[in-house]
Image 1: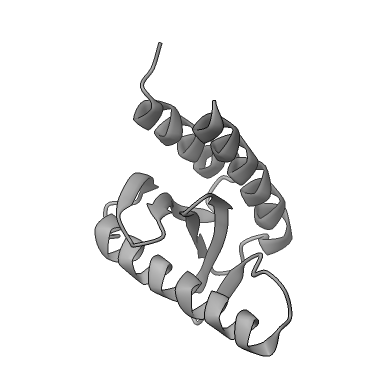
Image 2: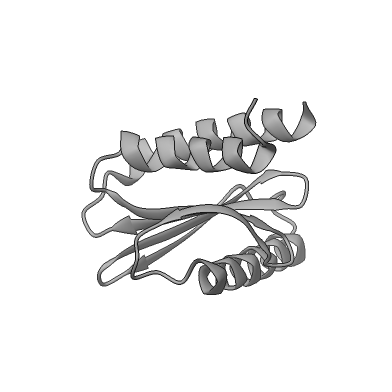
Length: 125
């Protein structure tokens, strides 16, 4: 049987593979920015992205708490050349996905939620 780390990387790999050229990389990160698993293109520093994603999710959580608008489900940065999608997926874990420009954001958001559920199930098994 594959280790938990291998299973996480397989789940992330399926997310990247199932979305063709839309996804440039995906990572599972602890809420304190430690990389748990990733499937990144060679030009992305996964450790740096983990730290950035954790910071982004932390700020997003503070904003929604201050505004009293509930729990943060996701945060999306829309940039010139693509997107960064960050969402909590399990206790103290964050899924971060780098998308290319013109990616099908709606479909990837659906796939990201499914990936998050698969990771949460794995972590509670």
